Amino acid sequence: MNVSETIGLDVNKVRDSFPILHQQINGKPLVYFDNAATSQKPSRVIQKLVEYYEGYNANIHRGIHTLAEKATRAYEGSRESARQFLGAQSTEEIIFTRGVTESINLVASTYGRKFLNKGDEVIISGLEHHSNIVPWQIVCEEKGAKLIVIPVTDTGEIDLSKYKSLLSDKTRIVATNHASNSLGTINPVSEIIKLAHERGSMVLVDGAQAAAHLPINVVELDADFYCISSHKMYGPTGVGVLYGKKKLLEAMPPYMGGGEMIKDVTFEKTTYNNLPYKFEAGTPNIADVIAFGEAIAFINEIGKANIAQHENELLEYAHRKLKEIEGVRLIGTAKNKVSVVSFVIDGVHPFDIGQMLDARGIAVRTGHHCTQPLMDRFGIEGTVRASFAVYNTKAEIDSLAEGVKRIVNFLSK
Ligand code: C6P
Image 1 (cartoon, rainbow, N blue to C red):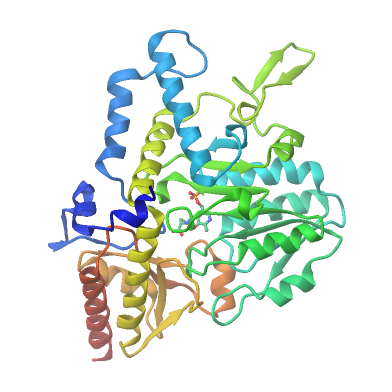
Image 2: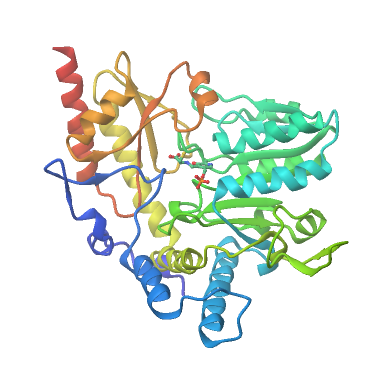
């Protein structure tokens, strides 16, 4: 049974399961529109953390006592949930990390260091978050490779024809996000991957902003690496997944050395553990990984199709309401977007708008959103960004539009 086709979405019921939403901020009901930074957590996810710490806190993969075995089973259960969520073939391909930032750094410092040589090229898009720019800059500098950027169009989309012309026999790595955190643009990753593979390049996809919104199947995409962060998917902070094709992960050297990532250690030589443990040195973030499994169950039960339908309605409504306000300029008008709306009011600093909205209980993010080169592309310092999740409502968008209208009126006096 496809859950998403059958249950529909009762947003009030969904809201009831998020305790944090039911509070006043500055005397007004909280409107939480900073979901691209981090989403809120349902009670069932929070409860999983409590259950672990109160009931079976133990280290994993080490002890043979009952608590250790229970904790290990729950931790590995989350790995299986993540495997299914991404459509990967094997749990050997699912590495737990601290988040997308660590996942990308892992690939850049292991795969990048091993396989990049002087004169090779790494291609990234102009829409990237700093965490999909800086790790490549570091490794390119070290190896004498060149970092090349795909230009972004005026609507905030990757220029595909330019991308095609940048690919060459020197291209070793292409790294792009699936969806942009600043503009919401959904990138044609399937095509990007196909074109890169035709040139023999591997592709890393940053799925930070896609995971809670879009269907993902790494096998259908044929992605070589795919990265997600739990905290943007209704799960705890401090957990991410690096999916990697088994043959690539096997060819890569370890990222960190320590406990659990070894098979045998002598002072002369160490042999490494099998996948995925080769990349999970030390005691991992056990509690949060277990609770991440519950966040995946939450998403699955609502269904990605229901989430997408609800969020698309919110996105379309927000675009319409904000466009009606004189002085508001939307940044990022791609045809395919996740539920992110970025805007500026010329002559007003985004930070000031953010503060005035906060006074009305509305949480948005302001600034460059860790995408400074993208802001430079649009000739702006930053934007005001409202990003929606499954528990947001049109009434909340009305509050945002009303708040922005008042700010514009106040400033024009
Ligand atoms: N973007 C935002 O407000 P971490 O912090 O490691 O979980 O994810 C980093 C990251 C990587 N790529 C993209 C596309 C992202 O959006 C983020 C995080 C947050 O937009 C915090 S800067």
